Length: 266
Image (tube, rainbow, N blue to C red; front, side):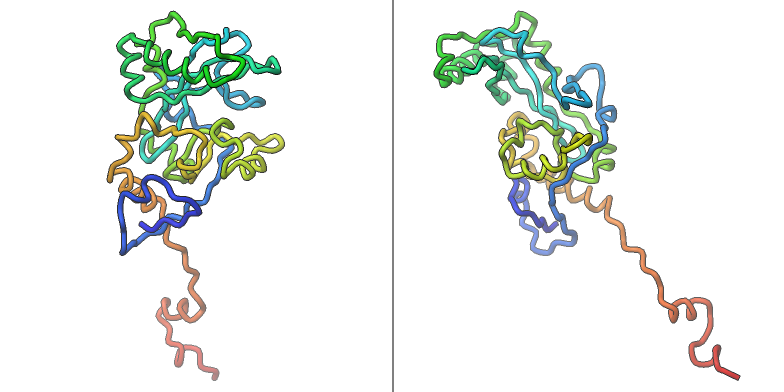
């Protein structure tokens, strides 16, 4: 597989294919259609979609400063849909606007939370909070709900080939402005998200150009030769040979006529 792209991504380096028999032109695109139902189930969390506001799953004004809540970023690498868990630390800006510090969760943090121990996450959150000048005296805390059960709803992997067929792309993310704001694709996405059309998914992107490392929890799974092979297999599955329209000579010959003798003038 030969990859033609303005940017490099992690799977570009997994294989050095010097005799490529298929080309992946990785140009970013978008989809306005909703396909969440293809991989949704009652045991997982998918950020709520609003036709006007887009994706959101909380009201930060109802949270106290220092409160740690959970959310997720959803992305796809053929044939799996992945959920990267993330912790949000609520704070109020100097302009009295509710905002969050985002912490992408590693396996170590998720394992600790799964065992009912939020202390590692709280320590990391307090360090991040200390970097906000007017927010230093606030101590972070986790909601009293059972972390061990709750975190599982934000950490999942589902096989779903259908959504890749719908999006016609081996890699994608659900659109979230936090991932793209000010980045390599931002101007393009702002143009595409204008008017009444709302971008649901971003396709054929480079994960390396996102504002956050949403592969963090799943990196050991993805940094594998099978990722490259799976992407290549998807490209072959959607590859269609061009339909050729025969010229008049070809049509004549296919019907058993001879070009020299069958159409002589009398």
